[in-house]
Image (cartoon, rainbow, N blue to C red; front, side, top):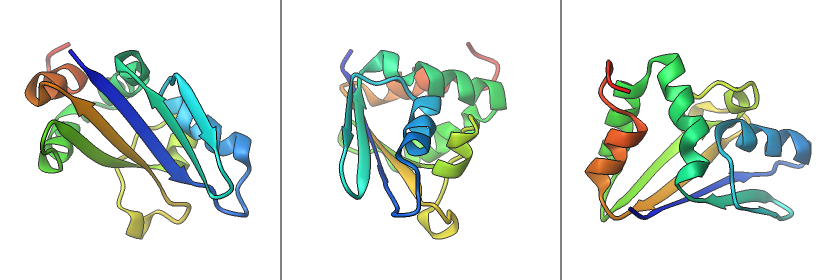
Length: 128
């Protein structure tokens, strides 16, 4: 199965680059890291999503995650936003740009079987 994860977040002038990288690293492992003047992005595969998968299970928000991912999924692409500030503390929290003062982590995952991917990342509560 194909999994390609891309995550990108703004780098505000007042933010510490290392702290933004930590926020990303708390949610994902990654194969590539790009640091630009105003953003940081990462790219990875299926293994990059294991931290997120575990965080969803730990917080017991897999059903919520399923709803969010299904709502914005189309053409084998899942798109969602994570709160950057809570990611820095190691807590997964879906977000809306309008309510997150430091911005969000924009996540885009391309897969070749959308339903199978969502079942893997966020199985119905009670599943593994």
